[in-house]
Image 1 (cartoon, rainbow, N blue to C red):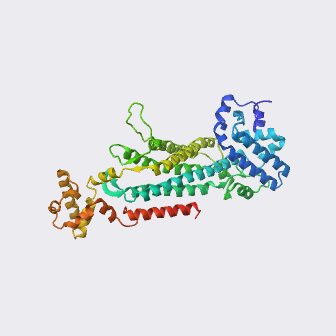
Image 2: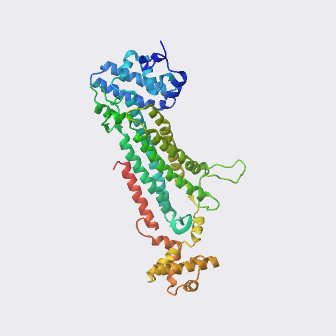
Image 3: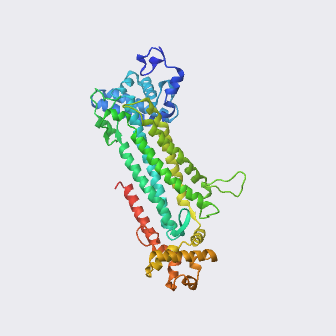
Amino acid sequence: MSQATNQSWGGRFSEPTDAFVARFTASVNFDQRLAPQDIQGSIAHATMLARVGVLTDDERDAIINGLNEIQGEIERGEFNWSVPLEDVHMNIEARLTEKIGITGKKLHTGRSRNDQVATDIRLFMRDEIDVIEVELKRLREGMIELADREAETIMPGFTHLQTAQPVTFGHHILAWQEMLARDHERLLDCRKRVNVMPLGAAALAGTTYPIDRHVTAELLGFDRPTENSLDAVSDRDFAIEFTSFASILLMHLSRMSEELVLWTSAQFNFIDLPDRFCTGSSIMPQKKNPDVPELVRGKTGRVYGHLMSLLTLMKSQPLAYNKDNQEDKEPLFDAVDTVRDCLKAFADMVPAIEPKKASMYEAARRGFSTATDLADYLVRKGVAFRDAHEIVGQSVAYGLKTEKDLSEMSLEELQQFSDIIEQDVFEVLTLEGSVAARNHIGGTAPNQVRAAAQRAREALAALKAGA
């Protein structure tokens, strides 16, 4: 018997596949990762086929028992994956037939590898999204608690990486949390479109067997079956959507990483990361390198690449399924792994951040961070804002010349720029007075930070409860 006739499609061919082509076109080396989902889908398919009378109950039971045994072999590392059998689907089907005989060949009735792999990937993505969501929730919880704990810790806020106005460390961390809250919404929204079942679309046109796709969808926990068989087997929007979510999330984590790297430097000296999240230098014994945030920052590029890979993969494909789609799995798998690992690293690391409060406070005192407060003070005294801006600018120029912060100047020094300034100005020139004055929703006042942390905590709890 020729090699060609040993394959599921070999009857039409007169010569075996070239050995290189067999290796080149095979996907089993990476799609074997879908084995649990492939078996799960096959069990549901067999159950449905028996329910509609295509299989007998005995045939269904033999198939399900055989598939469960194969699952055990795979989990124990005893399964022999074969490249000539091309993919995870044919490897499992061949082993099933080997175990239970001709009944194993009946499993594929009413389906194709086209709708089978589309279903497997969606089951896989649904499982992985649920795992990723757990890590995302854990990271958000850690950020919320850190922000609440540091609601009064003052640090400089920056624009253009130049000292702008004082803020609290808790307020800054809640800004990170807001980014992740949007990412969380995107992930859950993506899951809705993942959770639609292609099985039953067969190769591209459906099947002549009396299948019940609603039964299979219910057995597999899908919200509904897909509406169009052509689209069902060729759609990879959900994979692109996930990698889009992943790219935005990693962009956010990369921005956070950049700040963590800066803050741990001797030049900033704002925070300390526990040793377990850092490494040393092979030549410079004093070094403590923030490797975790640096590596997360670096991994962002590979996730961006996966998004572009999937977009490019799909951009010129005619309906319906094409062999190109075999190339969807490796970028998708790696994006999933990268997102999960980066979130786990951050969820472990962020709650352990130790702010160096004295360094932060001293940095906030430099750079005239309360200049805007002085301008606002003058406006409240009746000075037009543009005039107030000019007065404060002159005060800053004097401070640069004398190396004094605004809060360090005497009343007489300040009054040389405006006699409207009185003793009460020092209430707004302190860092504490500055942050406390931003006492509105979204502001950096400590009581607003605590209130925002509580709202975020309640929103996350409602999300966990499915509200």
